[in-house]
Amino acid sequence: NAGVTQTPKFQVLKTGQSMTLQCAQDMNHEYMSWYRQDPGMGLRLIHYSVGAGITDQGEVPNGYNVSRSTTEDFPLRLLSAAPSQTSVYFCASSSSSGPADTQYFGPGTRLTVL
Amino acid sequence: AQTVTQSQPEMSVQEAETVTLSCTYDTSESDYYLFWYKQPPSRQMILVIRQEAYKQQNATENRFSVNFQKAAKSFSLKISDSQLGDAAMYFCAYRSYTDKLIFGTGTRLQVFP
Image 1 (cartoon, each protein chain N blue to C red):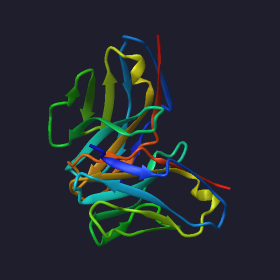
Image 2: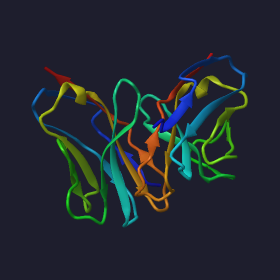
Image 3: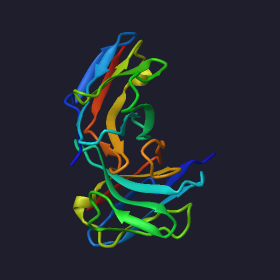
Image 4: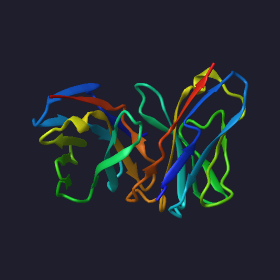
């Protein structure tokens, strides 16, 4: 059982480059989300989706785009990378958006923007 | 806005001893959930334990238990019989029907043999 997978595990970008962080889950979960983790700040919500075709902004959405064309996939796009986006990115999923449902996290992507 | 505060950046414990990690939160909601997540050096976020605010009884999962004080908005994690594998970052988190998952800043736990 793969659970939540993320690719790549590590990435180095130059300022202004674009890239897409991939996230996929095989649990047929409706709710998916992206977080960033910075030292001393815990995890902060970037964007989330309650189902295919539906996305919304979280706490720190600026500089990131998302789309949800299938239940399984929820890619995160950086259109023009900035050093402030250097962080560890986590994708998570749960069966619904209800607070009781356990969120399952992917292994994370460490992104460095030079 | 709801906030989660972990006032202990680092804690340490001797193997086989007990340690308590603190967490406080601020909310005006009456129905919500609280969580403790473990993040070992592998970076994987692992759910340790969770508590529903409406339940009086403190949650327990093997060596992990919580002390949930709703009026004081306190949610501490007790790890009994600490093991070397318990060394990790521990994050307290809050979620309600109107709020997404909100994390504290984490406590780094070291376990000494």
